[in-house]
Picture 1 (spheres, each protein chain N blue to C red):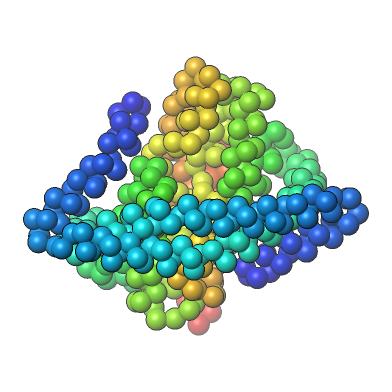
Picture 2 (cartoon, rainbow over the protein chains, first blue to last red):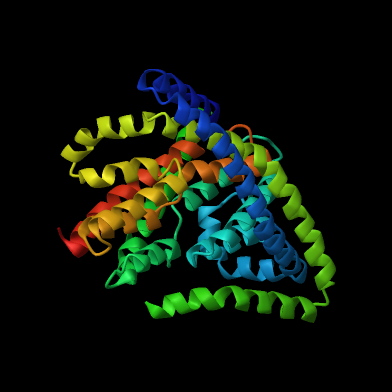
Amino acid sequence: MVNLIWVSLAVIGIVYAMWNGTMDEVNEAIFKSADEAVMLSISLISVLVFWLGLMRIAEEAGLLKVLSRLFKPVFKKIFPEVPSDHPAMGYILSNFTANLFGLGNAATPLGIKAMNEMKKLSQSDEASRSMITFLALNTSSVTLVPTTVIAIRMQYDSVSPTEIVGTTIIATTISTLGALIIDRLYYYKRVRRK
Amino acid sequence: MSIITAISTWLIPLIILLVLVYGTYKRVPTYEAFVEGGKEGIKMAFSLLPFLLGMMVSIAIFRASGAMEAIVESLSPILQTLGIPGEIVPLAITRPISGTAALAITTDLIDQFGPDSFIGRLASTMQGSTDTTLYILTVYFGAVGIKKMGDALKVGLFADLIGIIASIIVCTYVFGF
């Protein structure tokens, strides 16, 4: 699926550029975006090293276990295949909490760590049920404070930059619930096929 | 609302404080543990690089060629008949594919219509309420070497669609036209 999307984006782009006369722009974009990707990866090093370092302390101190025990009832229903005392659950919860407070740069390392732990559980290179649920939870991103948007609104002299916080919370809650329901439906479909 | 913003600024320092104090209390070799965990971060960032680069180049070609614009334009009339304001369509379609492009469109809409216009508020809500599905998939699956994504993409895109529809309904209801 991802192969198809990846190839389609590039092929459609190049073919379209042929008769749209935008080959120059495409050429420029190829190397500019490659450059941007490297810069992005490098800027990720700082947050990855910092948060994974800090979370290692939290893990060794047993803080992650405390966290998972706290939210066990809800997340056990969402992730039935992850044992509630497994480090995966701790990382899933810390990722969720980081997203909740709009700490995007903390959420990514924690999310990758959660995926790592879930991979240890499934022992395969295929996306497991828990991973798909986790992805669904992340792409619909439950946020309390959309910091970037508020910053832009301030920049453009909004009378009330934070007035969209309420609507954002409602919309994101609906999309997250929707994502979890769709995820369940697809899971049932997979089970029936087997 | 200022409470929420205050929580956000206080949260990171407080988390650091909690982890360090609790770790010391539990007799964890804090500094060594930090360094060990941090090393993992370097490896992760480098293993992510080819995944990010590949996807970003492909998206850049798609955008720069004008194909993305053309698709957005051809889809606009259909979406408009469904009650989706035409000005917001490019954002709705771009949001799941490219985070930076979506942010640029949001900024542009706010600049054009004003942050306190209906379009400005709707764009803000839409930008904040979902995340870039393709980026998350690339990063999370790429970092741990998952080759078969299963239904993840479909679920993610459906969630985006729900988020977009929810934003429009909620904004129409709360702010009106």
